[in-house]
Length: 475
Image 1 (cartoon, rainbow, N blue to C red):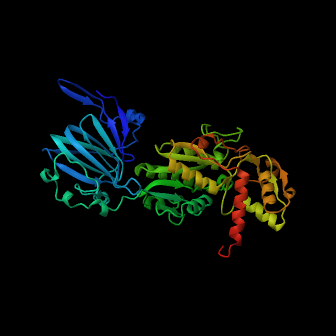
Image 2: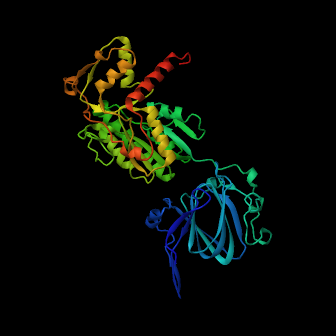
Image 3: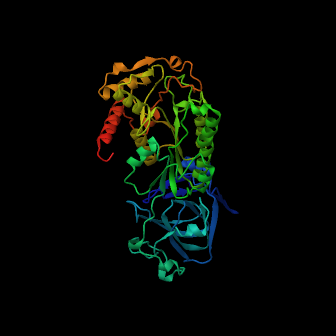
């Protein structure tokens, strides 16, 4: 009896699973699908929703080669089959092949887009498979086929196809040279008009598999807009949208909208990602913390001070229920559009000397670096979970950042006057509490191989890019 083990093959993602089979004179028993043990052994979390059985009465029954729009977990309950697989996905592994005999002691994990076929060697043969999406007439139109006798794949069928039993359809599938490769699942960016959405659009502008949508196409504040949107094509959903009016969130109307966008809509995104087996990348905030710690790490329990932070913390809890998610906590976001740096640069240029708080400490997150970090995570696929993502360097106050903006734009940094938070907001109503310390611990994101840039270097590049854009005749 073999031990439970998962083995890779020549086809990326196609896995062979050794199944322990316990037998005696009465027959045998096996755990055909045991999620906890199999995930621990290295199998992806299949999440099956349908179980199918192909019962084959005779030796030589041959079926395939079919690539389907879902993942499959294949095994044999009775008899033995010769299984063959060909990668029909777009990319460098297109056309890669693998074959082997399988019986009750072996299972195969077949990722979406890999063509699958089998031929019965012992009959009757019960060929079973779990799939993680429901079959439908519409889904069948997304199948991709390859001829069983394709000369390039050159599958060594134990029983020659001339002597085997094939369906009429399987005899008329295309050769490999005529197969249109299965494209990767698409990536959706929500909040395309925001600072991070624009940075992601710029980073991924050469990709044909990315859709950037603004509020005109998907409005998180509108339940009907979410209900009408088709999430089924997407394997990655990046939520770069949020309600971020920190002070307005303290008002009755603002509180309702903050909860609608940052919690209720996020819950709907979580369920859409769960339904369609997508990875959800969700951008959160330093405002989920009270600012008591010098550095906030990913394991710190949430302790928000105001309504905005409360809604972001609640949304984080929903996102964490997904098996495949990246929850990105960031702070002091700076990109194309209205933000603190743009305001300071404008004041410097107009000769206005600002008063800026010097007791709120944190780090910038320039959106080009945020976008690069997101790209890194969805490309390298480290363990799912929460990741802090900002620029690196010594934490600074808002006043120090303002002074740096003045210096980088050719103005006297001494023009920036400093004040405490309490003094700045004295006598003002409807002001949300701010965390005093917003710096996030970047150890975990560094451990994935991503190296955040130092914040002042990133700020200098950002301001230089803004000047170049402003000077451009097409801007």
